[in-house]
Length: 174
Image 1 (cartoon, rainbow, N blue to C red):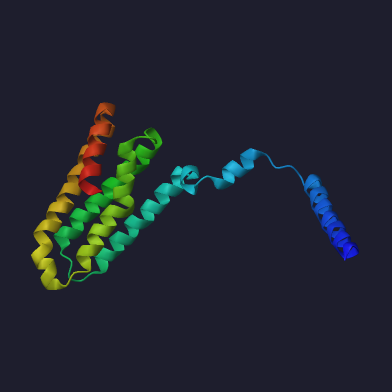
Image 2: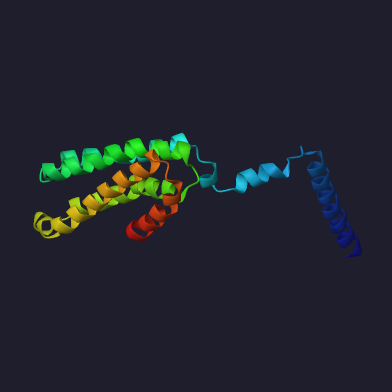
């Protein structure tokens, strides 16, 4: 019995020794490699790729409103105006003010909020759309005003207004 236990301990020791040798021979990888691998992908996003994703969402939205036969032309024009404003404003914000909260909020409006708002309205029945139209128009008009005011802030380089406008957007559209 003692011989079997000794042999088992000897075999386990050989396996562990083999693993240790293999680990010592393996190429060293710096700790920065592991930090890069464990960091969330959101921190490493390319601004161009970020805008491309927003642009894709805006294009999908434009196609969505254009293909809905029951969607009124005046609403289509208002939404397309917002889309045009966001297409011009967001790349400028990403380039000039990448870390600003206002940039983040505008990207959120262009990337998710506008699409979600319009899609929810389009998913309603025709009767429900008529009932909700006034509230929907108010939301769309508000988004249009936000885009115009944000453009003024950027054009006039009113950096003091960035945080104020960002907090307003965060409270209103989040």
